[in-house]
Length: 362
Image 1 (cartoon, rainbow, N blue to C red):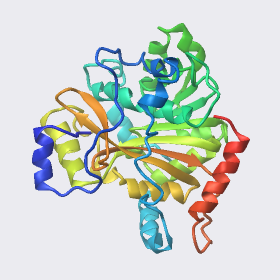
Image 2: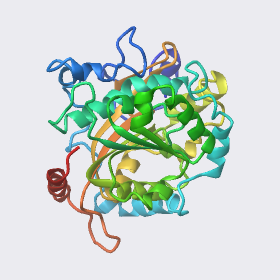
Image 3: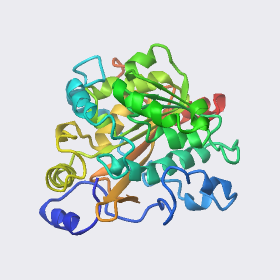
Image 4: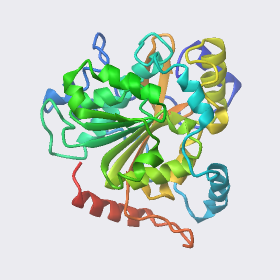
């Protein structure tokens, strides 16, 4: 969750992190803009709005350089399946105990979740503009009005609310009832959100039973590093999304640098996040995550690095994925079968994705 400053440079001198070199990315919030209420402005400005601010479409990863799970990676995938397919639930009881103690602190912008408040400055535009670039049917003021979004691990509603303000119909779920109570209470302050957002105290597998192919978009922001079984989690993601639906994930890479800065410095030294929040063993590299997504019916479209500056308390985009990163993937109609000799080709998946896009609107 770090990206610049003296601590980062010192750490980079000690380790050789994997990932791309640092670089500039799309801008976050303009100076002086209020968090949570400005995300529709770029779209409302018209032709010079989201298309100019996001003209690069976040495509830092091309088809030629993206990690692809070919036949020779079968052995590593088998090892990964042993690592992640150990249970049939996505909920980790130990993780729930961590967040139970802070359920009433979600909306304190200077408190334990301040880093997530500032993360909205880049993750909300990332979701918004990616979806807008995929569709020509927009409504001024409510650009996501036709979109049904599932926010998994919604906590107190920090991401659900700005997505609701963009017009989306949002379902926020969290296994902790105290988190849902906090989210419901805060939503009640805005009558508009009361109509657009519903919260449910349940897990992903719970809602999957009643919501097969229901959602256009699913968001799992800072969640996958806390689940009990990542592959089971991704399978349920596939189940609840419509064909051609979008999955957005933000998480932490499993590198030496992420351990030094994300756990030792951020948790143990500076206390930016509460100590014990993260378990480095549950972090996952973009390559491993893409393999899991690819083998469970998703086509990864974008992988972007994210950088946190602890001095300014702000996030920005970077080419380096050595610490934090964001992924956009789309559900295809092709799903690798366990008895097949080779996974579907990239061309096959693109063709099926095009068919899915033709039959559904975002």
